[in-house]
Image 1 (tube, rainbow, N blue to C red):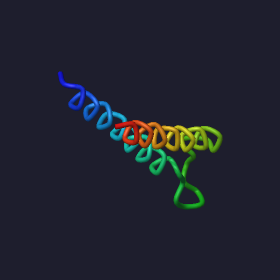
Image 2 (image 1 turned 60 degrees about the vertical axis):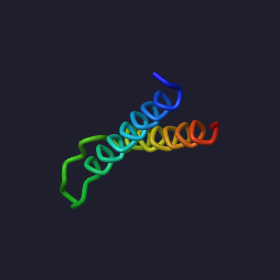
Image 3 (image 1 turned 90 degrees about the vertical axis):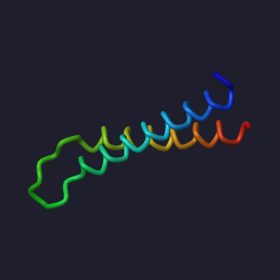
Image 4 (image 1 turned 30 degrees about the vertical axis):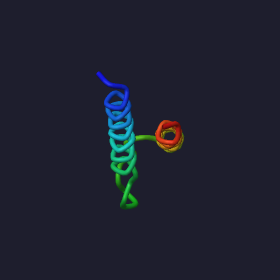
Length: 65
């Protein structure tokens, strides 16, 4: 596999992982006052940090062409 193809696949996987984490985070936030808490706030904060970290990794890989 060529380096460019491998890089593209890695970026796609990381971007997909970030999107999945963002979806999970948005689904876990209670909308109404009496909605059950699926993921406690400290864990949601960790997910937010993971999303930000993945965004940074993707930017770094994209910038190191």
